[in-house]
Length: 427
Ligand SMILES: [Mg+2]
Image (tube, rainbow, N blue to C red; front, side, top):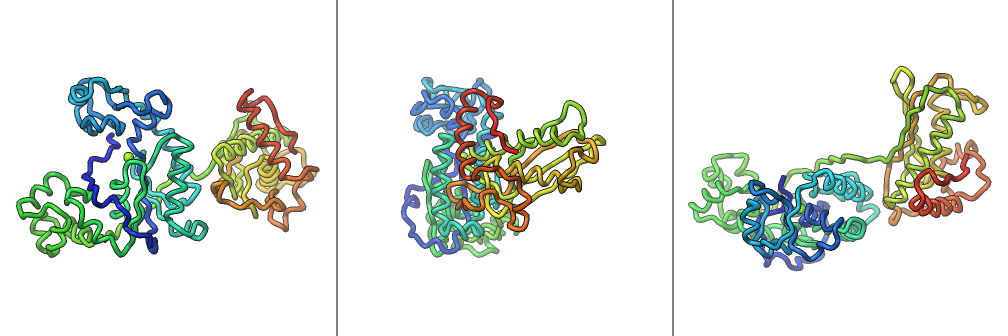
């Protein structure tokens, strides 16, 4: 897989196009030299050096740091040619599992802004921010937040294009690279794309570029002088021609189609033997809640919905979820909710000490995730129950906000001494 863009760029379009963000609800986010950046993130001593991902004489280059690109190294170039151009380069093998895990974490972070994410590859996605604008107000504010947090958290930079459609957003991010952001206001879409070579339009490969060249068409500006019929004659495809004719006007009617790998954080465990012991099941839910809460805090997230899951001895399972009145990230809030959901799931009375049927596995998950930095916490409601059910919550005897602080302290102890080292006496 090749993750380095080879599409032509034009210095001329990398400029200030104005600040009217109206209608610019599509972000194209693209990690810069992703595989190479991931390697540099775990080997900081490689920073500033020409790093090339791809080894072996028959292999091709999968990614190259910008320092390596200065030597004329491109993706899909045979590694042997790259070695001739840059013998002093650092050549590393592809570690897809590692890049995928970084990618997953990056997209988890982006998903805290909105779930309207269409991930197109391990390092690239379109994001429709229309709904997120209710809270964020400006697309550029979202892009800036994502760029800053991806860079700070993962030591990987990304470039973001902001426009009214996928085509212009993608071309904007390409031309913002590396480590840049480019807004193209709606009114300037046509002007922007007409400054680019024809080859920069996704879908115009060497073969169609050659057909257009024979007609004297090498730029989008020249394409824009042709009718849809003329373009059909050149390409031989009505569908392709329609897309190109739209592109020459800076238009693109493809929608952002969300595809999000993970929208929740969960933890579940299997019992040594199937059990009906409420105390045992409670203890497990408490530990799962602590794990989920620690993960939320580690990722800087708050969750609005808590789900309890049970798997029974016949391997069938049941879940029950509750959406809280305020988002949470502490076991002090998650565990009582999870326990309450356990009772609801099995139609148990408060006084019961046995489950009506044996369970094999129990777990807790948190969803409705949002970034802690941009979500207002409501200390008075931090326990998070809906008002009418709040009285069923256990009396913790401590203010939830204090427990939340206590748990944050425990995070650092667990980090130093291991997960099992300390537990809060919640519940
Ligand atoms: Mg990329």
